[in-house]
Length: 66
Length: 479
Picture 1: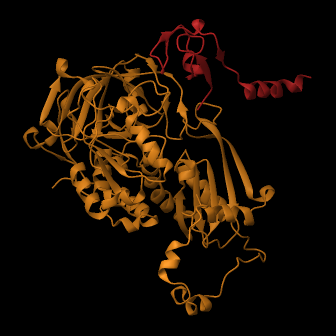
Picture 2: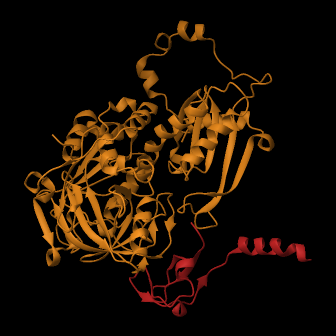
Picture 3: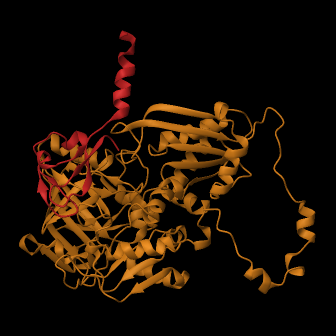
């Protein structure tokens, strides 16, 4: 699986998983699988899109500059 | 008589009578009733074929279609599907599959009158997917899913391809579809680049050999109707579809068929869905299927597969074992057996036993498996004294015959399964080879053994009576 982010549904407050490349920062309504609510990402109070390893990879790749 | 699921169910009742459980009480498949029962059974270490006589449909009314699931959850039942004795469930089953995979049986085209799949035909406004007892499998699933195989036809060459896809219920005549970038996806992309719709036929229910055949590893361009016919050991009977006529043939002996088109350039939110590794695939932006027609038998049986559990693991693994065994035999003639272990969802962990003659053969065997199947992530090669179907033995070999610094190799930047939750890229990842064989170029500690002579001479029943023997508990530490 590639990069995912988790998002909390503004209606039922439950969290589900979404594909980062397909849907993050897009103005597309997501579908809450728990309560059938459709909502935009801006309506969610919690989105977790951390990607630690790629950040570490980025640091490593530019380390030769230091 | 052509193979059909009802003939298979009769065979299971006859050969494995305790393997099938019928449930008379109504169940709500879209409210997790079916998967909750399967999960309870799984936690008890039981994996029966489940036949629900009275499932409810998506309208919350009684469905006219009984529901069968968990059909592939044991290799013994898969052996029966190929017409073999259940006792041949280990490597002989895989090798028989591979033998059939090497030939093609030209399908037969028949007329509509003789096709059971045409007993009931619904087109246009008569189509209503809610009539089916579509299963919602796991808590985070985006909705109820049809999760059986779909047929597509290449627009340039005259061949059909069949593979499993997840189809989310989206409306009375609308499904979502997720395709991994393999053969059907290639066909879809060809059409989409030309701004053409892609015809698709979802075969919701058929004889299990049809689905085992759909999981072949043949090259793109091989006609899957001919190859699946070979796995079924008879020519597939095909009949013109309702939507495209002779331009797209459908299996005449299936129970239920959904004909539809994937429009180009259309994407909708789809998922999440509990996928085969036993983890959720995330919500995605995926194509849709516009359903044009549904045809089925008058008393059709609806089929489902319990994805993310043994039902999908075994059906996905065993079709690959025989093919890989034959491929490895080409470079390592002393290969003895190969197994995709349940612990790796029958995809990721591949155990290969060889009678090693020279150093270096282990890696050749492992690389061949990885080259043939992109989802092989961890290949463990053991000696011929280890049974790859016995994971405890395989791990014993890893514990006693592996020095990690010497015997483990990592291959980076290689195509893996896009459904592997640990992969960092959409398709690319790394793989591991563990050489758990003894060296042949130096003496190595032998495995302990009780002398054969003593085993033959000292008979258990002369010292411990049968009743006492039966009462001795068997510790379940091997799983």
